[in-house]
Image 1 (tube, rainbow, N blue to C red):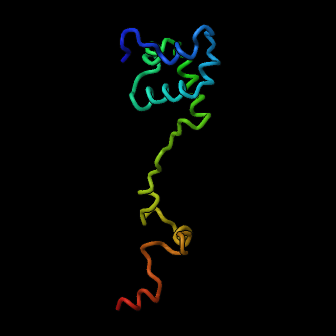
Image 2 (cartoon, one colour; image 1 turned 180 degrees about the horizontal axis):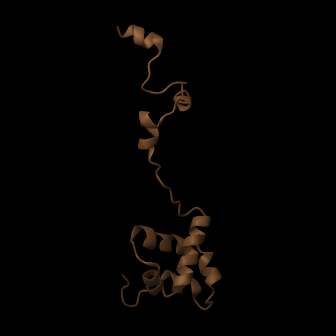
Image 3 (cartoon, rainbow, N blue to C red; image 1 turned 60 degrees about the vertical axis):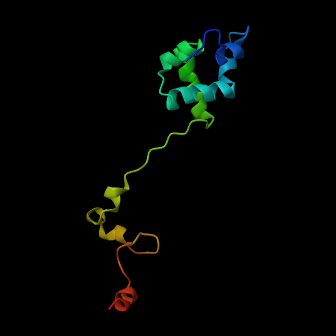
Length: 114
């Protein structure tokens, strides 16, 4: 939260210019907005109020941060269904690294376990 008299990064960057483009070109601003949104959980509207800029500027900053690789969003795939034996077809059983399903044994492995 802001302390009375504390200047926002937005105000420091814009001193006198008032240019949104100048804000969006500043990596410090993009990183701060990204942290506030994704790490601290503030809404775009709240960030805009805290940084004395528009919600549209916050939205553009988040997009610019994604474009520059500052923000990377990943979705972890659900492999549990894909790896279940019931979901494997005959044709996919032989496509595992090494040529066979991890649960299957070669004839040699099977013979050695006797």
